[in-house]
Length: 186
Image 1 (cartoon, helix red, strand yellow):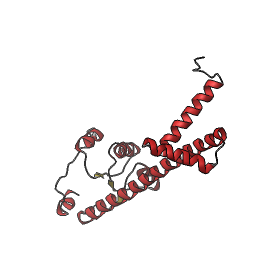
Image 2 (cartoon, rainbow, N blue to C red):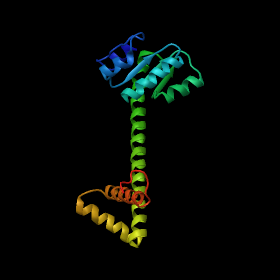
Image 3 (cartoon, rainbow, N blue to C red):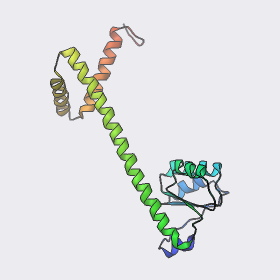
Image 4 (cartoon, helix red, strand yellow):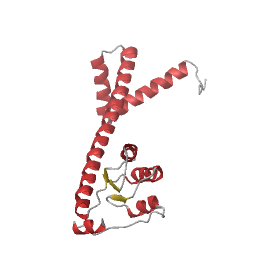
């Protein structure tokens, strides 16, 4: 494996013995890619791979001698980008590592997009709650409620979601005070 990587131009290769606490060592080394060369992976090894995946957020390529569907599924869940069975030939190592990096980057992009969509949805919900509050308390139309939120955000140099969150928080505080809920200082 090392010969294949060196022939492909990789110069900085660090080996970590399996008997060492390799998660801590990998965190210390902070590699661009993590490659596991295993015979037959066990559940314990895959749990450690999961720990590596969570700690480093790096592409992981795993070379194994034998496998089964359960181990492949567990490897994917553990964050392995390339899981290669009986494919440890030096001329194949670099293309497989390149594939692992590309798959990792593609997955990371999808994850980032998902987080952005979730954040936008959460913001949309809070804006809708603020609009409903304004509609019910100030008797505004939806368009006017949104215009009020937008105008306030512009005047204060904040995002509409921030203004909406502040309004919803204040409304909840006022409602709890009026209903005499715990935390009431009357």
